[in-house]
Image 1 (cartoon, rainbow, N blue to C red):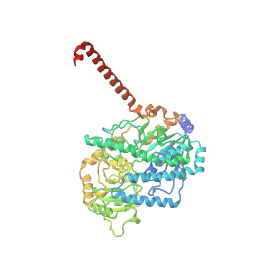
Image 2 (cartoon, rainbow, N blue to C red):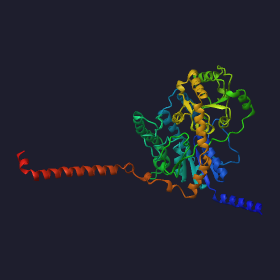
Image 3 (cartoon, rainbow, N blue to C red):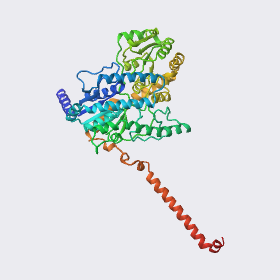
Image 4 (spheres, rainbow, N blue to C red):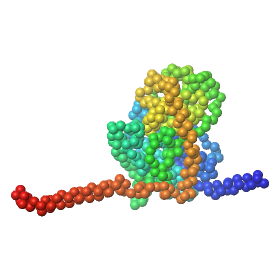
Length: 523
């Protein structure tokens, strides 16, 4: 009887879950690690029992050979671009990599990227057959990669409520009303930690005002797209669309992020991609086994950088690896390895490697990385210290946090020589404090009350079943800026004090005339 009761209970729970299942649209318009995250979100929600479809763009940024989807997983709708444009974009990104490696990944590169996003957005919004098909499916909610402003315009066209997922740390402060006390919350690209002296706080305030100007320039890139695809009188602004998000989710957590105040409609669920390690191939196990107790080093510069364009940097890295007793597994596209350069005998290059599984291997000693947030979160999860070579985007800020947490060292690519690189790696390998700090953060991360995927499911279903995130959104987001900063109150108090002071002065003069009339006349 107990067995029958158990079966009936499981069947009733299945029916309940099916009744509660929602139709969810996920949107990913950027490749690489951005796609990995939206793929994982889609997979987690699909396995939960929800009906999931991903809207993605095709043939643009490469995901580096990544394939992790079962044919029976969630559904996919793809917006395609002309091959000529795809080639143009890849050529631009190839040139951009050279700029990164020379330390010139500045504001200009970021704004050029936004130009490409705006151009792509115009093409996506013209694909009315796809948009109409999605509109007719009547999704309950969308989960979007909030890095690309275009997704906000697409979701507005579809008329869907949405959750904004930001695939990194809090670098979009100009878009979201998150509290940001400048005395201890560093601005993006400030290269500051939360411990700032006087002049660093001055720098932080200055960057804050620069950031406001940059944010206006960014939004202006999409003005022509909005004018072309939305009717006059009902044209949205990106600022308004950012405020419409039911919830903001950030791909970080307190193992790497500095503690900061958050509003109820803002949460973080880092380490979505960090998992217990799976067994490696026999080929890799045999290679690692040759290292003995020295262990091995994992090297990858991110999903979108399959090889390094600067020959001098490749030579310096290769020479530095040759000086170490550890084996080195380096993700580098074999067909693009310089023919004139002999690979160091302790190095194995691979077109693609399972980064998470390698980091989880007991002989992993060091991770050489570009400093992307997913890579940093995986290294923390497995307790492996890092040497970071940041190239662009939030990688510089991530490495500031890595150094502040004492789990690694940052080395800019334009300062990379064999001597400096080998010295940095030896410092990490020989000083136990880095490993101890990484293990301590790993323990904190794994002792979190809820795993990242559980947090994701909990919050997405909470938003769906509670009818949205209005109850989480502070009223301050609806106030004019002068009310938010109490400037009207400050003006009232200043005017009141001025009036009181004026009245006091007048009263003193009147009393003085009454008390000493003769003296006043003589004077």
